[in-house]
Length: 262
Length: 155
Ligand SMILES: Cc1cc2nc3c(=O)[nH]c(=O)nc-3n(C[C@H](O)[C@H](O)[C@H](O)COP(=O)(O)OP(=O)(O)OC[C@H]3O[C@@H](n4cnc5c(N)ncnc54)[C@H](O)[C@@H]3O)c2cc1C
Ligand code: FES
Ligand code: FES
Image 1 (cartoon, rainbow over the protein chains, first blue to last red):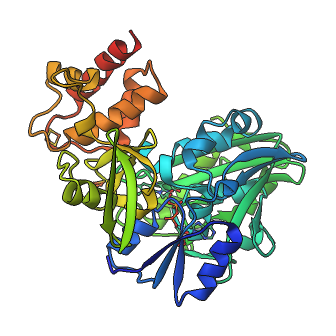
Image 2 (cartoon, chains in turn orange, cyan; image 1 turned 180 degrees about the vertical axis):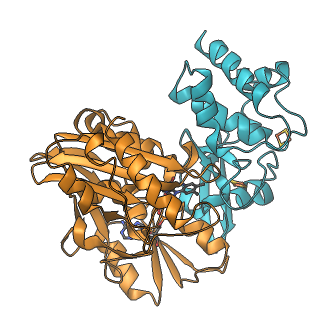
């Protein structure tokens, strides 16, 4: 790992001003992505601004029909939250499928969304539940947030503060894990809420995306038979040593049916 | 250089580290506690597992400076004199190790598993061991040891 200037933020304002004052800074949340990246010398920031002391960036609450999860909340905290389990059990389940216990004890929802790994678990939940991402500057709708592989709508130095998930009537998540890394090869999140049915997929493309053919077919209710014969195109899907684009397209249908309890 | 302080196995320790110094380097090279191993160095194998503020973490993936002021427990802090921790004793009784390289991380993870779930089923133990790789045992005896230790720790 190249050396860098380590800095510890004392407030969210302090974090963003340290970031802007530095030549080429990175925020450090759980470090479960950033530290391995630095160790492989894939990135060389001048400064690392640690958010670890910002307790006001941690916590889960219910506000006006939504579950609000602050950015520094760990996957473990989401997985074991009674509030999340009672209001959006599919989200608590999803958090429990991320990596392993050690990764869940450190990794955060803010870090996961900012990083936008093509196989990250949370993005499909954020899209399907039509969540809103709150930053130090603005609120970003889920449909505008994920812009490409490892790319988001965040500006340079913009800090995610929290994510607000409207509580759905019904939701489900299922994924087909890579047997070695446990990242989803394909994950599907299905939600029925006040804006109708939304289905979002992770792992299959450059970043999470919605499947409108499924959403239309499911407008009458979450019934696996309604999508059984819909073939999703493999155009633009990922091919790697783990799965071909064609296989991922197939898994999208299977995982979506399983997310509805099949 | 940064001055850091933490409580390791119940003792206050301090040291001077670079920003990039990893927790595992601080534990092994600065404190001489070489029970914590580096297996993969890519966050996959869990050989470097220690507890920070009571929770299992991969010490190869954390900066030492990031845990400044925190409480760290390593494999060396488990036994009480000659009396092994119930998890260590169960690994010994059930032959849950061969070369022993993964063992310190396995034991620290296993304690984390049982702390979160005092009465885990065999399937739950196998799933919870996701972050730890063993190249020798085939895991079977590790699962049995954790099951036995969980019973002992509940008693
Ligand atoms: C073995 C292993 C298995 C894994 N399996 C999975 C899996 O199955 N599914 C999954 O989704 N993930 C998985 N992960 C990744 C894990 O979820 C990470 O925790 C997550 O991607 C990043 O979160 P973090 O808090 O560790 O962020 P960090 O590594 O600290 O930061 C990641 C990036 O986000 C930026 N950042 C962090 N916080 C903020 C913020 N509040 N605002 C703006 N930018 C920010 C950082 O600057 C950095 O660029 C795995 C990781 C490992 C090591
Ligand atoms: S050495 Fe840390 S996970 Fe392998
Ligand atoms: S006992 Fe040899 S790696 Fe586990």
